[in-house]
Image (tube, rainbow, N blue to C red):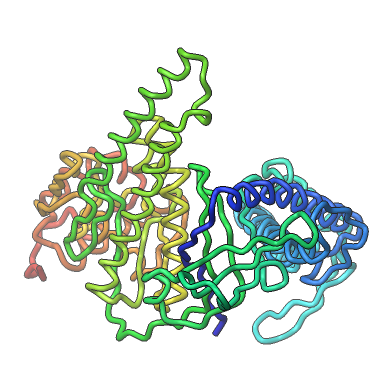
Length: 497
């Protein structure tokens, strides 16, 4: 099992002079990180091979010390570089999957992409298939195509920048020390600065949250600057995975009136969107006033403070709701609609200012929190296609846009089932997971839903045949679907429902 690390808050008591020194260090740190990344990227393009964790950086001229240089590479530049290339792999894999290439060509391109062989593909490659190793020849066309796919990624994805990067270091540049003479503070951080031989000492103290998280202390610290300009210190801790008796499957639907609806009937975060709208309205009003005065929003302390409050609210509410669900149900699997569906079905319903806040903050926090619970609790997180889940009946499977009466009310036109619309959608997500319908396209989702209804109608809900006959005859969703045998015949057998 891979180790789990979390950067947890530490309380610090740096005075004004030390904070000014840290701010100066931030400026130089970011510039050096950008220089090192440029060197790494140019070397990758030149050598056409992915660089490892240990690299010779003597050619890179940085303002900060050599110790800082290698710390920046190890903790900032290299992880960012690898993450960017992982994004490339995911992007290219999706292009290959959605292409019309033959299966053999797709298999070959998948293998080249998975190994990062975009710029220097070999003449042949070994692939494991059905527990056997086969050797495939990489033609000139394959080499040209994989390079083209990588260059397409580069055109649509900017290289990383380090404008908001934290200062991360181990005891070579940020040393955790026991106090020798000071009476008020037991521990200090010795932070190397841009001036040789003149470190600063910052008094620090563990927070209650840090102590509550069980795990092993490391010697790695993070110093971050918030959007309000305040300095925060975090210590990286190796977290012990929590052993819980995991139970059943929990499905979550992003609601329009609440943050989450579950297949159990829970409606959580009911005030979430109204609160976000309230913050967004204040931000819009303030932004208009600042523009009339010729002031940039980022120059306004009030604007930055309000924006910070919005970010913190979204972050805390998402984490609070998910923590509550885990504590209550202890699920083995969490089924959610894919995050692209979150944007299409939920975020697009709100004004631009709210959309910006939810896309920038909400999606990131949700993804981060789901990754954390997956690592810490061993919960499997599965994404499924949400298309037509809001129109489909979770009981009989009938899909019709008129089933959803309002944002909160759902009433099936076929079987008459009434329940909360978001709860109904979450139950449809659960059914799709259980029956193996995950991330197919919209048309495939509709076809799957129509076929499911026809099968249920034939096998279980024979009492609905007469009603279904009238609905299906005029509905466009069912125009290309062959009716189940016997739908136009009088029901002779007993209904199984």
